[in-house]
Image 1 (cartoon, rainbow, N blue to C red):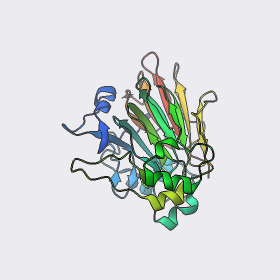
Image 2 (image 1 turned 180 degrees about the horizontal axis):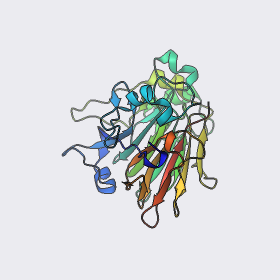
Image 3 (image 1 turned 90 degrees about the horizontal axis):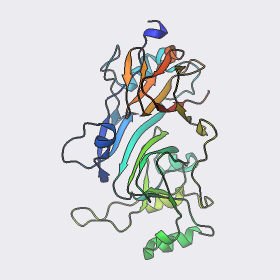
Image 4 (image 1 turned 135 degrees about the horizontal axis):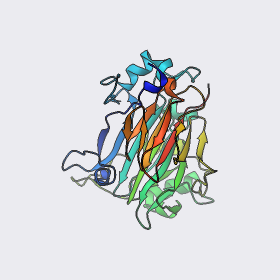
Length: 317
């Protein structure tokens, strides 16, 4: 295939029911959610042993992301990437109807000893209700013994800063950063390929049977960065939102045709607004799509006013 005929890859989403979830992925992005379920997460791009993205159309229809990672590495993903046994990025949509638990992802320095994997992530707020918040980091002067005491006394909320967020804001959560997403937020999440989360506090919430959810206090205490004080929202620099060792995230306002990448590596996009076309494939808001490395110079063409995309690129080897 010539690069102009190689289509972008779109995948079937995997919907995850969560106690704090809702139905806004249906109303906002047209996702066909299972009836009667509170869906907190839609895993859009995933190569996990327990959760596989499957290509939904085109020449690779029915293939899993992992199969492609093993068999079509150069054509789809490019050469010169850091060696990894699985596709290194996990992309999700989150619908937090209620506040999520206070949690942390372990840094690489302790993850293996805890039996987990490190996870840094970027949040883009696709829709935030008026006054919606997140919780992140710690107030100045909070030490581990202060935090342990607050857990015992149920006063943790006094030790963690809250940030009001608006639609279009972004936030970076490096591994080790204490965090919770408040209710009323719909988020695009780009993260390392990991599913290790340690819940340290759940706001005294119980399940339908009156039981509290499982917490992971010991693991969380070893993972929290107690020097991470009063973090702030991302201040974008031009198109750049975040560049970290695992990936780069940008926001493109697409008012003219533009190639996906200036070098032959895969590029991951999320359509926020408008519409875009590539190799005859129409992409609408709510769609993630992967542009293969072999098609990196093929044009992305806006098909509606106000077309905007999130763009995710891998690190160099």
